[in-house]
Length: 153
Image (cartoon, rainbow, N blue to C red; front, side, top):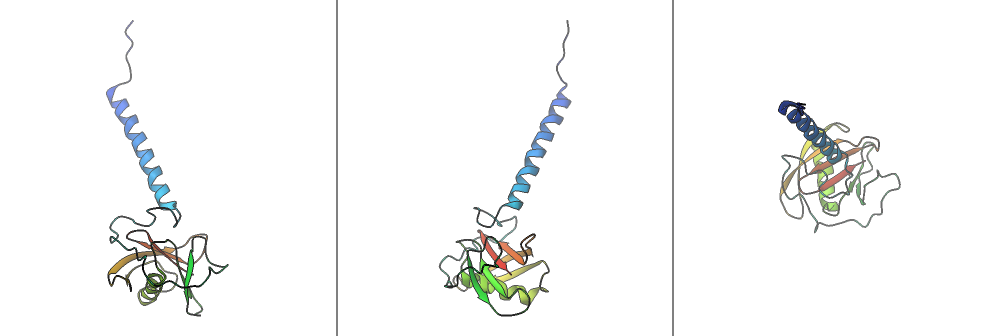
């Protein structure tokens, strides 16, 4: 009896499909990770080292209306649209969150996605932050570089 196994082409196609499924799954997980997770928001092409851990913080408590993930409210300019900023990781200082808030309003129309450049008051360095709608939680979330996360709400 001559029993043949699957052809090489079929095996390669199945292996390629499996790799594609795993890659898509990993990409989805990385996109959906919360701001408190390690590595969130680093993204391809983001500037390195956006962390600003030594920056001046605020003693403000988290606003009960803040989106999930805000560790600390950093500013409230009292305006009608997105008046507050908050930091979303320990690697993000309040001083940097305020700088991102100011850069966003210089660059974008409130509520629109934008790529903004913010200068860290602590390091003096300029960092690129990608800001998009914070789906399901309102406001804007900005991410960039080395785990910096800023909420505008």
